[in-house]
Image 1 (cartoon, rainbow, N blue to C red):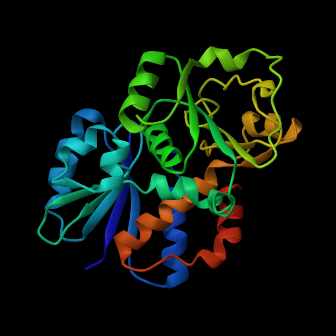
Image 2 (image 1 turned 135 degrees about the vertical axis):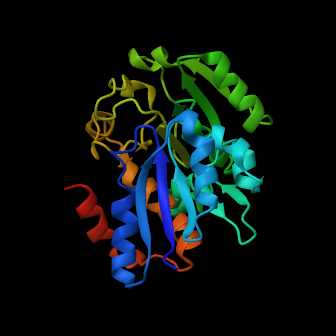
Image 3 (image 1 turned 180 degrees about the vertical axis):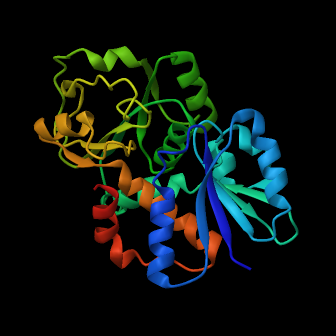
Length: 284
């Protein structure tokens, strides 16, 4: 048996996941295959049905636009996927059933863990996007005690996400255009506070429209986090650095979520001591 996993989406050719998993498989010297599979929404059920008949298939990662739809194809979903309302990893169980989980949550939080260990007077995150990845991020940050401002083209959709995933906090929604224009808002003292600005949308990705965000909306000392991976250094992150903010690019989350999935697929933890080499390979 050669354990085989895929990443599925529509489109999918741009995915870096096969490079990441292949890199780890090679470093560990263990048998395994990880490949892309182009799966359209209308073919999602057929793909899963076909793969369940393949004894080598251990599961798949799921990217746009399937993270919500694939939930309804699962025999069961774990608490993180259920809470976030999105599945990014499908696992084939020994009895042939499919389990949905969400490694986006842990992957997103991984580069923030040291900061999150600290005590803060207040935590606020401005999140842009209302898709499957944004849902995982909303739930994750709400669990970490953040007050959230969720921005999207459809504020009603954003409000529904907050009502579902973070019903207990004093969170806010706003139209995406609000952040495109400068503000003269005078921020209070942010010492001892943690502020994030997260692009959880495809805006700024190669081939997509750019994200219009004026950095006057970000308090001093904010951390800018962009989940986009192509390009690795987006205009959003470049503008954040120019405004004096720390930045985290999308490969941090991509590698983090892949690491959690890799262990589930292949039964061994990936060799994270090679992360610098992996990052260099991904950004070439």
